[in-house]
Length: 198
Image (spheres, helix red, strand yellow):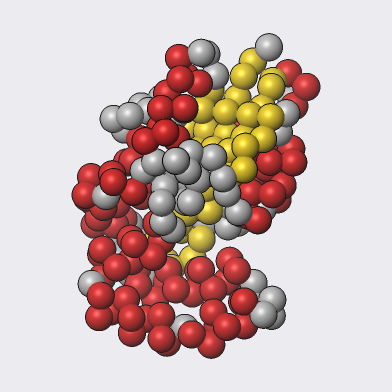
């Protein structure tokens, strides 16, 4: 039977949430703090369950990156990954490499923007599939909006089924670390919660 290995990125394969680290890396500490202070009211509403997670994320992303060319953005993403490989959990990478060696198809499935997730794997896991939140581009510039729904919760299962629709034809192993992975873990034949934390 075909084997699929689906793994969350932030917190599962990394030690920190990469959105925050990416913004600080690309914008600098001062702009990072100012931007989050400007959106503090939305963050509070989100925590209270009164404002959707994806809307807060899109508003913050738009604040920092709207109007940037996709070429500049992708170059920043590549540099960010090259400078921050220490964020990866070695045991997680080793586990996914072994899964590939055993014939499984490995999918990194993340709420993070796939532009900066993908470069983390070009060396260690070159044949991995990246399924993340995608950004909208118009005339080679970021619009500040997301092209796809935020890849979080049930959307992770939706995106996985878009790739592999015949669920009875494969065995699914999933790795996650938060409530955003709950549906994916429940969907799997074999689920691992908060693995790789040595």
